[in-house]
Length: 211
Length: 211
Image (cartoon, rainbow over all chains, first blue to last red; front, side, top):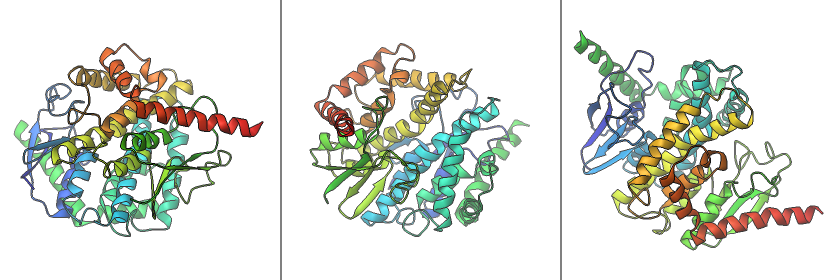
């Protein structure tokens, strides 16, 4: 494996701190014990200043030696190939990790993020509410029966699903005790705590530089 | 590899025919030359009748010998591991295929499907329109420079991205010639044509049985 560099923004407002998606990569590296360097692109002009690295103007992206890769979900799955701590190596465990990782990105987040966007932009009614409710209810049923989504252990499927479900508006939408316990179980892991604290410290330091 | 079975619905209305996501799996199998069997779950009661196989009540899902896997994106990436025709085997080609496959599912489809849902449910204004426009404009720029997304050849990244972009309302939203040429390039492939014709024939046969 080459040297890992996680790229993110040099500053963000208070609101998204703790939720910028570089956290997914930091968390994966902490779980696997992979050292990494952090580098930044400018918040100002972010929609166009790094299109060569990320064609939608988003963060994060990752360099792994000579290789560069964007999309937080792809970066996490790329890292998962390098450590059994992130994903089991047997065919069944790997397939189920992949299936639940994609479920997080394409079945749950595909509804939760646009729902949240409608909410903050004041759409009335929010036409995605019924759909989100159905997705979260299905997840609650799944999580009532198991501690982790795949292979009876923590994997990157949980990392991605928890990062989708822990968004405050989503988490506060309805009373789903199995989901809440699952989020707590995952975010109490030392690797999450370290990744989260490091992201907060990164943006706090940016405020200090501004003064 | 075990015997492949693609599971889908036994019937759907005219509207979604040609767009049910079993097409992604059929298309991947046709590209790779993998034979498969088709099996069905009932359209009636679909929201609860196969939750043991698919926890959101969706189709498709795939059996590969003893292994079962859901989420069309995960099934396609699972199949891609088995054939170089679907994904290059070198680290760079594989990483870029993964990155663009996830971009299709988590950056483009995460906006296009909820936007489409708001459109058909009559949300006025559609608060996702600006976001969709931005995503499609970024894709247009990318596709102006290249024929295929990853590794300078057709991969499952194109399969997924094209399946997202060819949805009629999305395709008709704005004039983006490079995107249009890309969709045509992909859907003119014999493997897509066969997969599409087979899905149409499957649902036409279901109508015949009804009579």
